[in-house]
Length: 367
Image (tube, rainbow, N blue to C red; front, side, top):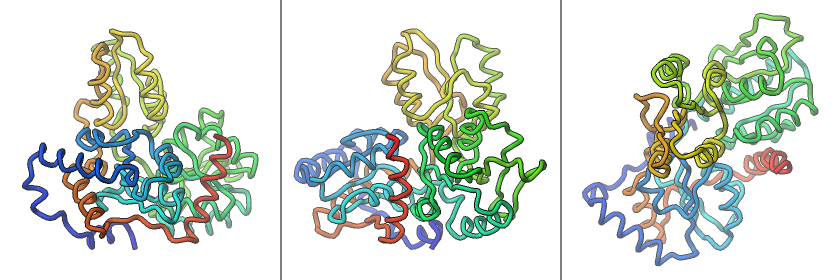
């Protein structure tokens, strides 16, 4: 069942939660946290709203939070403030006794959904015909458990935006070619940084079921899945040029999920953690335009008021699916636990979890 099919069957938030004011919601969430104590762990992704991040026990990127969930073996319940693939990864890494809950099952990821398992298996068959057994699959952790499992099953691994370069090095020792999914931009930017020319990169179009490439087929080193982040793809070179013309003193830092052209035009690029660290270490009075999700940009602006920080895209909106997690849904999840009928539990089947874990462990061996 696809994510879109799944959300059609999701029960709606009961109306009475929407009738509560913000302060009542906050008080009830705080009371639940106090009563549940160590039985509860709430990890929150950097891109989440402030109204729920306030209650996070830890904030970080998706894999970091999944690993913290794994380490927190006292917690019976993990309420993941993030999106579906993040909760899946947490379930894969935590014990069978722990229950991972996603407050709103509609909180998905459009990029992760751009590579489903049926498309991937069909693509693999055709790529094997073209290139034979010369490809190792790498998947960004921003992917479904099924895609992680596919990579694990075929000797591949996962990668984060922080360690994608290391994982490319590893992959190219294993085989002559890399299939990188689901984000073509992170794959292209990483491969280029490793010295692989753009002309040696092909793109697999899962909709057409064909390879986009104009050179000699034997020259292909990297096959990029035609997927993208709907937030980061909205940053453009024109925005950078306009900003530089208006204020050349402003430094520009972007996430490598942005297009290759944007990454090349920016002053710096890096993972969410690198963006946060770079801003933290920047001198007072410095000016920054940040090309990443708006909730994080606004939080950086609020935290570092001695610096001038704004979004590279002045018309940028927060990630719609990330923003589905709100106080009413968080309280609904906590109420369900208190009533001994926890809902929205994310459970990855054992076979998928085992292969996905092998892909994750290949990556984690480099940590």
